[in-house]
Image 1 (cartoon, one colour):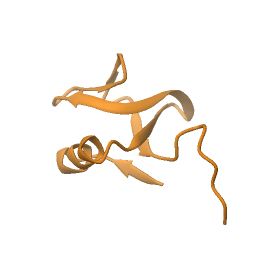
Image 2 (cartoon, rainbow, N blue to C red):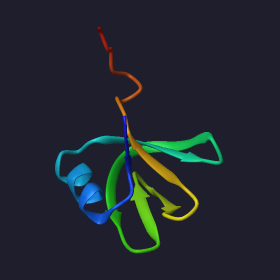
Image 3 (cartoon, one colour):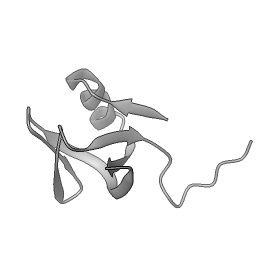
Image 4 (cartoon, rainbow, N blue to C red):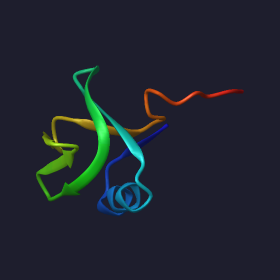
Length: 68
């Protein structure tokens, strides 16, 4: 799983429609597809999250089955 920090990483997540888990203080607070972002916030689904207070991680969607 990859943490998104830079604008180009957020652009790629939007372009490839990557599912993103949003973490804050070690807890999952949301998830979905990134719709937009600016220098202070990232819009994931219908919610806005602070870029400074949240961590954005590319991860499999919750309903995805992963086989090793």
